[in-house]
Image (cartoon, rainbow, N blue to C red; front, side, top):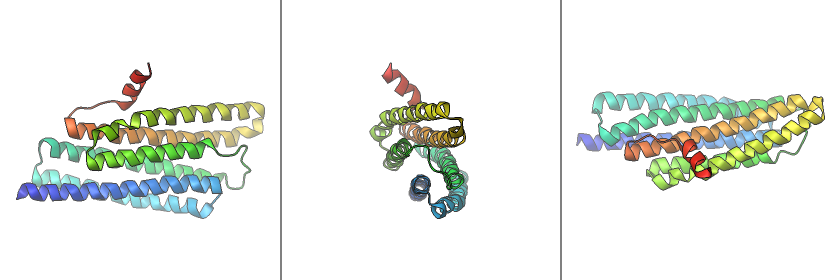
Length: 225
């Protein structure tokens, strides 16, 4: 009976972690939309909603600690709880990156963009795809779906390099472009970091299932060589 109770509580934690992840997806989408559409109200909404994610993180952490203290989980259940601790931290940090993008959207609101924003929305789309697969792989405990992040992570890194090189050309062409190009490069960096945190979630899936830690970035490099 106690084991059934533990499983019920673990399922509730996973459901709430998924809700936290869904809110994060909305935050990332809205932050980039605020940037591309120059929507200050949407940017402000993203900034304000960051507090909701912080509150969700604290609630899930408190309940997970309670399970360890009261239910004394072992083996896979304990690994699952440890993974939940790690994942909510990654989600909270990704939310911080979304908030930073929204703040940048505010800062750039009255400026004419030095170039059409094409690759940054593409980066956001790939990051969202990664996040969707990572969350689904966790809730379904799906190893193959977790490993599917490897080519997406490589694609995101490739887009970041493309943004970097293109913005560097704009900086060299005219010094007046440097402040905005720097801001756009930081935004691309936030999206690249979101991808890195997403691979952490996939790594936790493998840890839950097999009890071993892997480095998806290292595996990606090995497959490229």
